[in-house]
Length: 221
Image 1: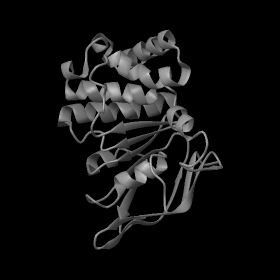
Image 2: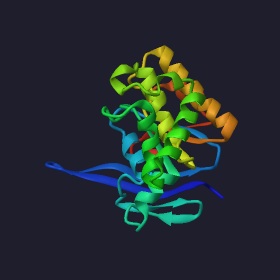
Image 3: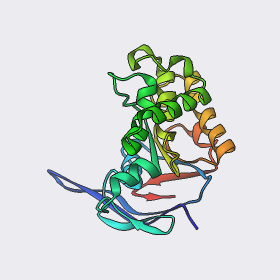
Image 4: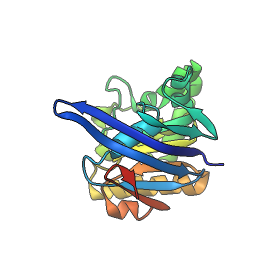
């Protein structure tokens, strides 16, 4: 059974000049342990698609299934689903500036469990795995861009999500830190079978994934 299955997804936005059709019928299947890259020109709808898959936005038409069950943003427990089943890594790390690295990582688990001690303990474990434990008590403005993205990856992992969506995760990193982050994701996939769907404009990164899809004219090729 597919971990994620998408059928005939369509999405449009209204503009002053009329309707802009972004996605015109997306079909996609993702199995557990897949590492999938989605590439395409700027403005092709890659981020829009990722937001739909992660239940951050709703499609105009089509259906999305997780482990065989249809799901949408209108589902009663959708917030719990997003928090526990999926993880997000964005181009901009979106760390909370008033919280330390380990507190940022712990936040999703704390929201789910209300157990601060347990959440911090697991956050430290993840930061150690990602080789950044020594920066755990530092605030985001005290971390480098590469360190901030590692914290963001740890945050995405803390609730043991079935799938992680990464939207241009290396977009704000230099080549060295970009390689570090992609190597980390590949290692997480190799060791833990972690499933990734990555949107990127970088073809070299895409080539390191198991499968590559191109989003063009509103469909995946």
